[in-house]
Structure formats: C-alpha cells, structure tokens
Length: 397
Ligand SMILES: *Cc1c(COP(=O)(O)O)cnc(C)c1O
Image (cartoon, rainbow, N blue to C red; front, side):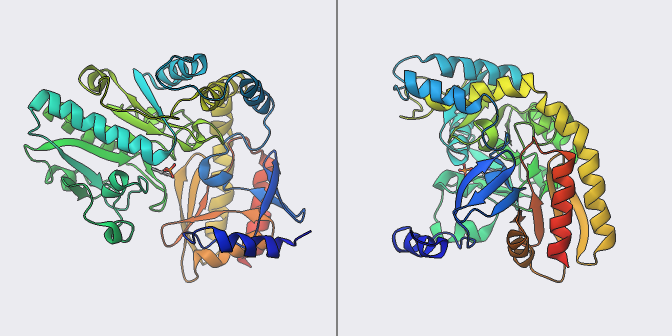
C-alpha cells in the first residue's frame, strides 16, 4: 500500500498544478470530523469551503441520495423531473423569490445572473444599458464572466480582455457606487458578506442604499449568496436579516451540502422581463440527483431547526473568538456574522497558523491576505467550539 506521502506525489504527476495543496489526503468524514488516509482525525471548521453545512453522513441525507441513484441520475432539461420541481419550490419558499435556474457551480450561477440582468435591460431599454457595477475585493468565481466582476486584479489580469462594461466601486461605500452610475448602468452586484475578500459583512445602510438606487433607476440588484447563504449567518440567506431583497440572488456551496449544485434565483421584477426559452441552458444543471440533495437539505433544515441552531450558538462562538482577540497580540480583531467568522492576523502569515492547526488536527482556512476564516458545518456543538478553541490556541502558541 502507498503511504499518504506517495499518494500525494502521484497526484502531483497527473493533476494540473493550480493549487498549492496542504500536505494531507482525506479519506472519509463523520459528523464534523475528517480522517486522512492514515487514520488521523481532524475537527472540521472549513466544511470544504462552506459547503458541508450538515457535516458528513447527516442522518437521512445519504439515504435520500442513494434512493435517487436507484431511480434516475440524469435526464436532460428537455424533460421535467420531480426532484427539480421540489427543489425549486423549496428554494422559492425559503427565499420568497420567484424562479430558480439550477447550475453546477457558483461561477455558473454568477454567469446566469449576469445574463439575466443584461437580458432584462436589453428587453426594457433596447440594449442601451449594459454596465455592471461590482465591488472591490469581491469574489464571484473563475469563469470569464464571473472573473470580469471579481474585484481582485491579480485574479483577472492574466486573462484579460474579459467582458466589457464592468465598473468597480468600494464595498460599504454608497457614494463610490453612486458615482459609477450612468445612463448605461444595468445592474449592481455584491456579496452580502464578502467571503474570499476577508469576511466583511455589509453595513445595513449600504444594502438599503443600493436597493433605493436600483428602485429609483430600475437597475437589477444582484446579491451573491454563494458563501454567506444557506443558513450560514442564521437566516436562509444573509439578506433576509437586513430586510433588503435583491432582484436576483446566486447560490451554490451549501445548497446541496456536497453535491455540485448552484442556482440563480429571480424575483418577480427580473423574472417578468428576462431569460426566455433559448436564452440559457445547461446539460447537467438541476439533474434529479443534485436536486434530490437540495430538496433533502431543505427538509433537514426545517425538521432539525438548523437556522435556529446557528442563531443560538453564534453568541457562544463570538464570545470565545473575542476572548482570543483579547488574549493574543497577533489577532487584531474579529469580523463576521453567524458561522462565517474571520480573525484578522497581524505580524505573522495566516498560512503559518493554518498549517499549524492542520498539524494539531484542526481544519481552518484563510481569506484575503491576513484573515483566518472559520466556516464550520452548521451542525457543530458547543463542545466542538471548545475543542476548536483549544486546538487553535495550541497552534497560536
Ligand atoms: C465560492 C464562491 C463563488 C464561486 O463558486 P464556485 O462554485 O467555486 O464556482 C462565487 N461567489 C462567492 C461569494 C463564493 O464564495
């Protein structure tokens, strides 16, 4: 049998080197814990980057997927399938929005949202409006369209020219958005809590201001809920806590809790004058298998009160993290909402702490250049939080 080290070396021979991976190969998960191929246990506060909201092997989840495998895995979008219809209805109910298009990833959800916004403006304003205002330090994905609206130059620059008509403003700075609006503006796009950029929650006034601008000028307001959505901040979607509803929302990551699925969801205004038959499509998107997962995830969230659990435990998590901020010089502050938390690190690289934590059996990740990011499964317990703090302190020391 190959050692874990040999297995990793073998992977490096055939897999394109687009990631500097951590030196660990995972084999299986159970609850909020992972096990590498040598059997070492890790407490998971990364959740596959905010995907595994229910941890691993949550009761009922595997069974629902296995049952769907036995019935039907894939059928084209040329036909109806029952899981898609159920998943669509549950997504509409959870969001109070009208219509979903299921995709295979976050970046595809962004592509769809941008197309839907452009189509709306094309229909209503004869193609005179096409500009999209996105935010600095945002992250929306790696495909050419999503890259075009991602506000970090080093992700974009090697791939230019990207799609045109994109302008950038500063997150949480309404004035900086206002000055970018012209008679060609079509949409404004923002995360509600910036994730990759360093865990920055939106100010309520910023989102309210964007909503007012969009209403006044008939622009499409797009919220990217790919990371902050699906219960992570204590409501299904982070915007629900702000009471500011977008015209289009994107989801992915935790939507299927481990199967590759995303969606862009249109509110009534956008749905009434947007994509029509022939405008958009996907072979896999919304197939019965992934939609059975989405549908089951919503059932579990309801039955087991996952949102309530996040809201209940958030003060405890925040209190414990705040104590670390007080105790350690190298942690300058905490930012975040619910189970999407960041610790700002100074004087030492975040990567060093993440690597130390891995050695100590704790998975955490970084965000931006100086933030330690905690995006655990939503089903962690108080004891898991205590254990995380203990392992993190060991890694900080
Ligand atoms: C992860 C992420 C994306 C991209 O999703 P992929 O599934 O990796 O394409 C887009 N927006 C946000 C906010 C994300 O966190």
